[in-house]
Length: 391
Image (cartoon, rainbow, N blue to C red):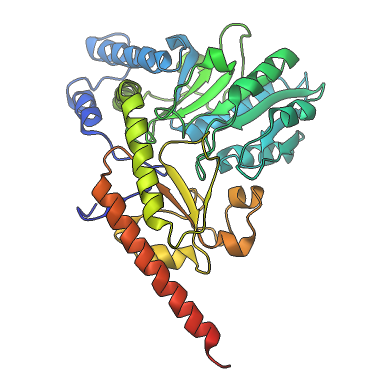
């Protein structure tokens, strides 16, 4: 990455923290065994390292090591949770509930199930992007087996009231799955306090490596069962076949530990940087999206009126930001999240998501605001001239 680039796309991915990389390196070269090879020391060393990391990750969400299933990331964890529960409990019911602003990994999984005999209810949100827990309660039916709601929205940063939703689902005997990929390491998580039954986690959103994630699966009160998606070898208690990515697991645990230890001070610092950036952009940005207080510390989604944000970002290459979710930013239509909170298509064309992170500085906020503001004014002037020209 060029040294002069101002990286403000941490919701898409984060750079690996040097402390995380340092922890991972020996597991590529010195402790390279397969964790499933129990007949020699190299395999046992790898298994021991993976189990220690599993315990650290579990501890960070107030769970136990046996509750954690390693996956390739949060997308796989979402698929395993939603499809696995749907199939396991199909005889009890074929109705699932989710929310309109969920990540595509959740929505497309639900679409797949809908095409194969399940019924999906998609609950809307308010203009801040929050779902009303009472709307979830109203959507629950006698044949509902699962509610899937993200903890923090990846595009606008809004936090849902998972504790209130968890209370409802627990009282109604319905399982609750939470996609916490964007929230993990940025906001405190306690699966017992939230009454969550399944939770998806990802390492690369909190300065860990790509290609590793986890699914928390409650084993008591109630014990949750699911059908696996991958078969072959009996890994992860038969829940997810495949050789464990031990270096990735080690990095995941180290990243999670660092994030937990530094969360209080980092959240305050990053939030201040976000506000500094917003102040610098406020001359040309008319609106910021998402909940004003129940939100991630570093997510700033703003509207620049009268421009196409694609051209803004292309013509401001020093600032790395995005139109929305990284997995859907290449799509020509506006974000489904912005549409769900009532933003019309034309206005949504001017939306940019900036996501501030651990290694950003005040100077970068000021420089990014100056560069973006200048380019917005240039594009607005160009558009005004174009409109004024006679046909």
